[in-house]
Amino acid sequence: MRSGILLYGPPAAGKDTVTTALAALDTRYVPFRRLKVGSGKSSGYRMGTAAQLAEMEACGDVVYRNERYGNVYVVDRPGLDRAFEGGAVPVVHLGQVTGVGQVAALSGVCWVRVLLWCSRASTAERSQRRGDTDTAARLAAWDATRKDLHSYPHARWEVRVDTDVATPQEASQQIDAFVRSAAPQS
Image (cartoon, rainbow, N blue to C red; front, side, top):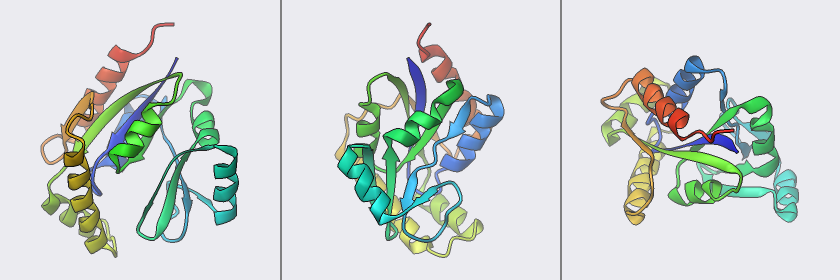
């Protein structure tokens, strides 16, 4: 059985930073690049078109899709299949509990669900520090994420990390320890 990590949290909670720290611990940890249909930041995404998305949806290859910041973000079967190649452990970033549930429901994968959290003030400060031009939209997404999390009080998280307190290295070590303890034995 393959292993993967689902990182859930509000904007600027540290999903990219923790993913980088995980990759520094073990090269098997690789960021999953979601398909993005829209504009803006392309780094970390596989940019696609509306026609490609429609074709994937028609074939049943869309595992989860969401819309935010005027774009569509997609977790797709072909992309995940490629991400697992060579024994890699993909790290998938999500901002909706529904998405975590839909991706975690895929058979044949032992997913570790991680809740990364930070304060709203930290999201504002980190967003401005990294040069986001849409900090207000990031704060609205933080509010939506908090509401989303409260709407699913029974959501299961194997690892919870407060990134206002834990360093990226501490967070990655905690996640890595859980992944190794939960890894299916071959």
